[in-house]
Length: 142
Image 1 (spheres, rainbow, N blue to C red):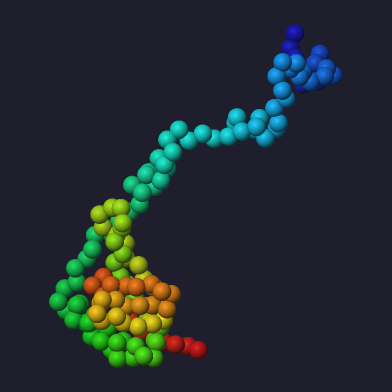
Image 2 (image 1 turned 45 degrees about the vertical axis):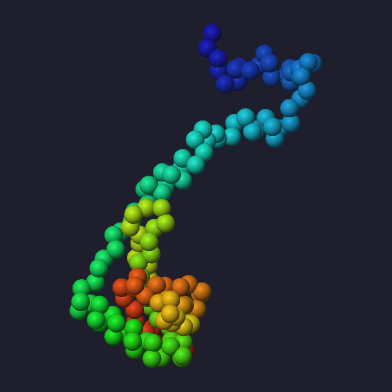
């Protein structure tokens, strides 16, 4: 006999739900925990993501590019007390892998720390002068 959707559970639909007499009833929260995803290898996803993260090799600027960069930096240093807005592109080394990424940040120049050779931005970020590959002043449209 083929079961039709209306006859499929007719024999049990009105019966009371079984409760064990030897075991306590499990709360719904614990019952649901049985079906939660299980990560057999904890930290594995982070390792895979770290391996998949792409890095770039540091590019060494040529003499002409380095000279042009130094000239732009010198002009910005002259106006550092005015706290100009600058756009800085620099190499950020990856802490876990060889290489790193090039990042461009636009922010206010707070100061230049000549002793430590750092460019201090308004957001608190310190950029090593040796890592900078491009810098220019952003026109202030206030």
